[in-house]
Structure formats: structure tokens, C-alpha cells
Image 1: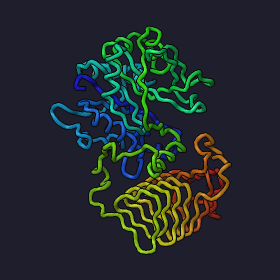
Image 2: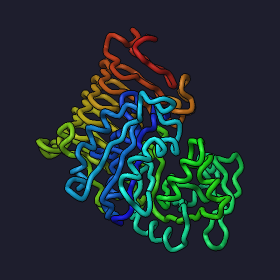
Image 3: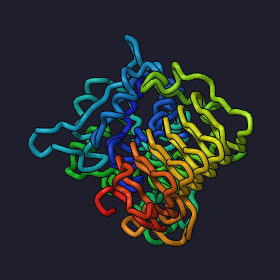
Length: 422
């Protein structure tokens, strides 16, 4: 694998995650208590024996760049190993921000050509999965393909979210449908590609097209050079609030297939003092914890069930946290009730408040496509007043404090509070 270069596309805004991506790129969103989403791609690269990886950033990259650092957390430090963070070429004529996945590669062809390789492995930085890329590269070489796409079977009702391939008996992709309304197959692209380096460079330079799924892959298919690598295992695109919540819940579901420890997924534990200098979690007398992931530094005095808690979360006496995801240093006051709530970092939930009780069939009024399954989102640095009543499918934007709430302290089902519409 020394002659394979890995490139991770990590510039997407991920707007469907709403307040979770208001101040960070989607791959930098915390996941599973101690990880970030990009940790899975980086760890897969590490565990597959690749020595060099480039991370292409764009949207609000500071948090992502801080997290990756020198790459030492994934053993990408040394004379023969390394990770390179590549921002867009802002300021150059006709090449400000990336216009698509292929355009992101086009703007960094000089980096690819400066590091001689036989193949380029192109990855998305916003998926949760485990894959040994060595098997895919071996398959690519064995078929003699110029391009290989990792594909897996998805439910028929989800095919409109993916690029769909139709294969012949040899595994060659003979037809391609990009997010079809009515697909002829349920074999979906995972956004993982192996290109022969020379073919990739020639293809990018020969066209002004900007996207792999819509342009580059169909052209390779027409030339008979596009093959599929069929993947069997856990994989989730966590680009929606519902998918993000479900993937976190998979950590708690026996047999889900999501096992970061077994996969040797690494993270930057020094970033923001995530785990270093944190004491062990404390579950005090009278507390009750059921089927939950509790990180270091948490203090549990109340009830936690079916939830994922990041370092430093405090749940006070009489509080109940059900089916929720609480990020770093969230404080839940005594007597508070949380059901299917996702909080960002540094959130304070006032005593005797209630969040997540109501009619789950009422979608969020401003963002109906983001929240419609009963989840309530709370942004970073929010303070929920004592006794506040918040329904389901609600959004509380970051930095909302006590004086920004309506006088009755009630936020009905499907409503959004951003501090300006109190």
C-alpha cells in the first residue's frame, strides 16, 4: 500500500445537521462520546497500512484542523508517514471554493503529482464505517480497472439518496444512475473510489466537469473502465440528524455492527483535553444507568437510559436523560427531563425543565426536512432556564441564554428559538 495515496474529502458543510455544523465542518462533528466523524476514515487509512493521506478542507475548517493536528494520533508522523491538510486555493482566478468533488481533486493535482503513486484512494470524511482498503485495492488491481467504486446494498426506499450501479457478471458497472427517483438496482455507491493515478489525472484535466458521481464515473463507465467492489459490513452516511442519532444509538444496540474499539478507531484525545486529565466517570449512590455509553469525567446522580454522554457531562439528582446524545460538559439540572435530545458542547439544562415531550408528528416548522422524527437539537453554549418546557422536533440555536426565552418559557413542538424570535 506504499504506492497508494489516500485523499479524504472533508470540505462539506453538511447543512442538514443544522446547529451541529453552524461552527464546524461536518467531519468534525463529535460522535459516540469521544470521537469525531472523520476519525473513522482516518483510522481506516491507518489500519490499512497507507503512509500518506491528504485531507481536503473548505467549510469552517478550524475545528477539524485542530482535531487532526500533526496526525500523530493516527500514527501519521515521521519521515515516511504524514497527513497534509489542504484548504481551497482561495484568491486564484476561477478557483475559489470547491465546486464539487472532482473540482476538489482538480485544485490539488499538483499535490497528487508531487507524490508518485500507482493508485489514488478517494474517501469521504463524513461516513461512519470500518473498511480495510487493502482488499479494495487488491480487487482493483485484479480486475485491471481504471476506476473501482465501493458499493453496498441499501433498502430500495433509500436509493434516491445515492449513486446506483448496474453490474454485469464480471463486476463491471454497465449503467449508472445518480440519485434516481426510481432505481433499477439497490447497489449504492459509498463514495469510496480507487483510481489509477494516471487515469485520474488525465480524466480531471480533460474535462471542466466538477463532480465524480455526475460526470467522472459515467465517463469511465462508457469507456468500460468502471468496476464495483462489493462491501459487506457496517456503514452509515450520518448527513442527517436522524441518521446521526441512529448511528450513535447503534453503539448501544447489540449486534448493530458498530464497534469502534474492535476496529481500533483512534481519536485525538489531547484535543480540548478530551480524555487526558479527566477523572473516571462517577455513578453516585441512587443513580441509575441503563444501556448507555458514559465517558470519563461524567458525574451521574440521576437516571440515564439509552444515551451517549461525552466527557464532563453532569446529570444531577432526580434528572432523567432518555435516548439522548449529550456532548462535552453538558450540565443537566436536578429534576430535568430529556427525551431524544441532542446537545452540542457547553450546554446548561435548568432544573425541572422538560425537553422532548410532545407530538413527534409535528415536524420543525422552519426545517421540516431536518427534524421530523421527534429529535430536539440544542446548539453550543445554550442555557435552558429552570422550568422551561420544550417540545419535540425543536431547535435551539447556539448562544441562546436565559434572557432570550419567551416569558412563559415554553417552546412548542416543531418550533425554533434563535434568540431573535422570542
